[in-house]
Length: 286
Ligand code: COA
Image (tube, rainbow, N blue to C red; front, side, top):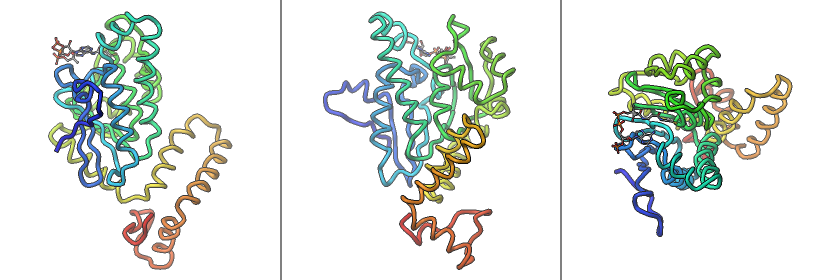
């Protein structure tokens, strides 16, 4: 059943900009402005932060999937409500709107649970922020990715230029940003924007399968791992080596039981091989 997060005193239109359902450990969250191709308005940005907040530490949520209702994943920032209407309020309006959108993308980048972008359709400009914020990404072959900013006269801001250069080669990023041409899901996968592309009618089944693999892993180790992969990219080798030692030692203090059980099932019980799959978490609380 699809839910809308209700909060007293907030306009129902704002509440309805994001929908979600929680099923078998997976929170399926959707941009929910299909008639506006899920472009991100200040109202959507505020509601998305509330929904992420409400789901992050729920015990029945182990993985979060971000998708879009209708034909779009997200057509980027709302040119009317995010740009024109906030600019009309002066710098205060612009900076406030930026804080709200960048705020939930940052929250998502460092989210407690693993996250998957399920890109079902259009993905433009500002949409690259949440795309990069998700740990993994899967796209429909039919999806279209574009840095369309150049087509309406701005640079790819809101982190979009950074995302392109983080995910794909210099030449791809430069062509993509300067030409304003879209690429489909298959090319997005070749370029590294997403992990895989597959036909739209197979997309949610594949994401479900990936999410279920993640649900079997040690959740403390998953959080430490996803943070480590993001952090070490900007570090020298020596700094990364040191960070990883500290991060593992910090994780150990949270997770003695799970880690010890993982070692025991391999070394003593010989019931699994870490190189071929995860230990049986049903034998421990971690
Ligand atoms: N900002 C504001 N409104 C947007 C929007 C955006 N980024 N993207 C779509 N919409 C609105 C349209 O204005 C239209 O509103 P209306 O029904 O009140 O006229 C509605 O959403 C449907 O859009 P439409 O263009 O008719 O849908 P489409 O399926 O034919 O085309 C797109 C889809 C995504 C190709 C097209 O809407 C588009 O180019 N959007 C802008 C993408 C973009 O450049 N984003 C900027 C990111 S920073």
